Length: 575
Image (cartoon, rainbow, N blue to C red):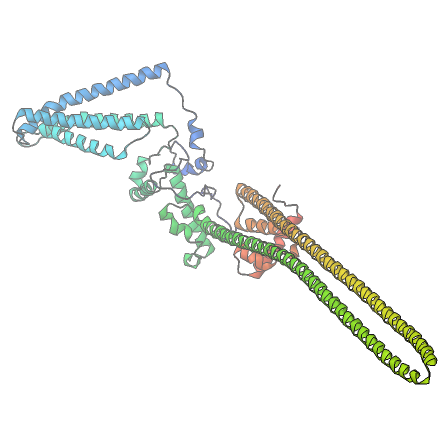
């Protein structure tokens, strides 16, 4: 064994690492039978549970019940004897020496003391039987019994000087009360063992140790009572462990324990508080693990808050998109209705303008035709005047010639008037036909405008349908994104749960195997590598430093290398 090796002796560090408990809840004893210190190591190296050692509670047999009844009857008889012997002595002493005034008052005093003792003893035994013992009630019983012993002894004191027989007589007066209290304490302990078989028993320290090492034994007794250690061999084993550990530190540091670090000095510092060597050495790792759990819990709460924030943002964005789609739908609907109304208005205005224009054109054509008729009438009047002038001229040439010429001129005038009238009539008809064609063209244009209006309305309806389809698609996308987010969250939760279960099984397996802190750290790094599909190079050293609370990258690299070797050897946390 080298200087830095762990000391292997009778006091091996393979004990339970549970924290010390208060004195009101004592630990389970390692052994029911005290053994000498020299043989304590083998006796406690493999402790047996107290429940297993005691076995299941059994009912009393008939003989045992008779024996218990006889013991109770004997205890009652002993109590009667004690009351009978002490009653007169205490009453007489109270009357004469304690100034009670009369013998009757002295007897009442003696009866009150004895009845008070019996009542408190009965209550104590009853509560112990009901598994609800009252610990402090024993002290008034002891006090009153001590007072009874003193009064009985004082009643037997001589009038003059003391002789040896006087001391014996005074002591004999107090024997029966002391014996009665001893029987009561034995009965109380017996009741406690019967009704509470699972209660841990307290070993007593051998009287020889009190004689040989009273100071050290007093320290052991004090620690056993303070920290609830019920087994004397367990207490001696703890002392042996502490002494062996101190000797190991002295060998390691060449006799200078002050060179040891704080973690190595913990067993000496925590021993007065009930910690064993193994518990004190495991304390830094336990505190680091507790701090790591707190950090993991804080990180989990932070991630949960971020997840809730992202979900709230997604829901807000979905609501915004939904509202925007509804607004666009209403806007398209309003635009379609507005466009349709405008088209109708434009068609009506255009039709009214065209009708006014046709009416004006018809009016203009009528005025022109009337003017032309007046011109033809004026020309006809002028022709008549020329005919009259010609008649006057012909009148000079001769009546016949004048008549012939007059007839020829009238015929020509009639022909000309007919031709002019026909010409005027033809022009009016042509203009009327042209006006009708123009009216037909305007009507076709009005029909075309109405068709354009209907087309605009159809386009508006198409836009409305497209807006509704876009809104439905947006709602479908939102629902799909929400479903995908929920699926991703559920998958992440399943992954975290599986990782937590694997981690828990791995930690339980490590606890069962009682691995050292470094082995636990290497296995934790191996599980981190498995979480990255088993690729060692993908695990950063910073993550290892953070998880294991190490400051040196070199140490983190060593952990990662050992973890890779462990995985190569076939380590899997689920196996």
